[in-house]
Image 1: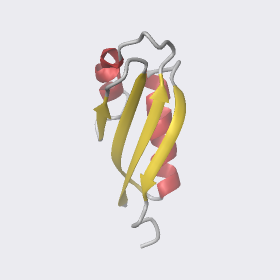
Image 2: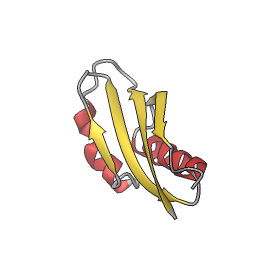
Image 3: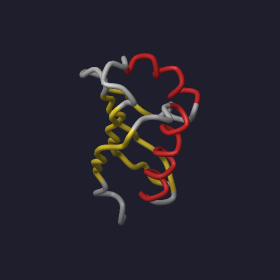
Image 4: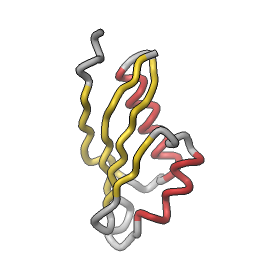
Length: 87
């Protein structure tokens, strides 16, 4: 398995939501391989370094984990460093 480095950025269900309230639920739904970045109220960015068989598998499993932890969040951007995706 390879490691894939990517970031998922989400808009929370309400612009008033404090993203800190989701830290423990993210950890319990499989995002223990992520660094959660919070700054603006209503937004959350999650940087993953995830082991998987493919880049697609890494990203889709992370999206599934985040949706389990924060069902009302909307994915607004995904960025990746997949230089190693074809090694």
